[in-house]
Image (cartoon, rainbow, N blue to C red; front, side, top):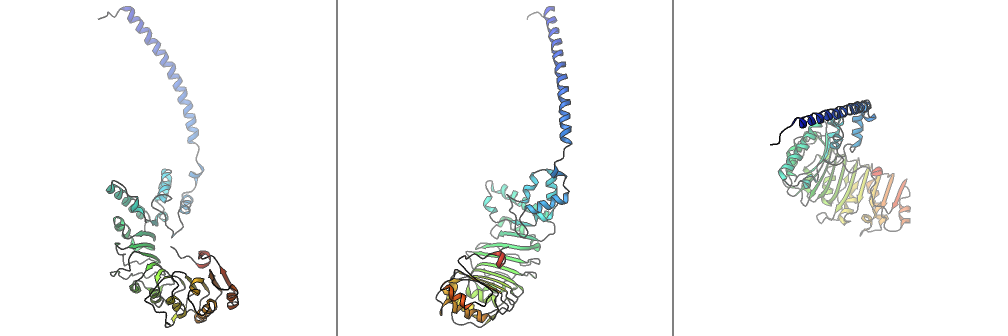
Length: 381
């Protein structure tokens, strides 16, 4: 062992003194830096971001303008109210306390986002959906989902007494809808790869006024809705005999849009008159321009009709006499004084249409088949 001499001890004492002097110098520097830092921090703390000085009520309204306008629905993820809570805790509190932000929800396709581990993903999505709907408090809801999304059905249908607008897909293996829907105003249903299920129970929906159906080939739909109270109906990819049966049950109808499919079950022979005394707007698009559709058009009686949109193919396909003459017969049977007639993709001589319908104030012959919602009403929820 090397002896710790007096000289070595003196050298150590000298080093400690040097260290202490350096530490004191550094502490002085740190103290100066801390003081400067505090000045900068105080300056930052005294500044308020303008957006954070806005009244809570105004911020809440800005948030409402960010999401789709009701009843259009926000997605569960992406441009959804959830993203508003990611900015800061203040915004999150404001968003979570505004029920209007959480009254719409589009769940279609959510099941395709589920990855591994599946159970954890499902638990996360369910907790998010439940929290979302709880934040909507007691407000009416606008919901879109598919009845084969089995993992979320209980969470969604638990609030069915608040559904006001509903868009739903019903696949072959899909569950049935709840039957008691006291606040439902508008309903959009698409049957996917399936006829109307035999076990379909009638809906009790006393406030329902509009129904939009796609892909229906079964007359059992007749008993499904309170058709007599509806004022707007859209039937797309629907067989003609189903259309006829439904229209005979809708005396209050004001707006109607038809896009029919080929139907061998309805005869092309004359039908008994089908009266729609309140009908104001009728849109007939080209699906399968079969003779049974033209028979249905000839049977219609719509004395209050003001606006009529029809694809030229419907008029012309196999129709005798010529298209303009056939349409004149249809309008004569309607017994109305049209204010606007639009023939999309007119077939035949344009001059014949102009001559036949010269008395109609607004005659439009167009190559555009699109039904403009601004002119012909909104047919989507």
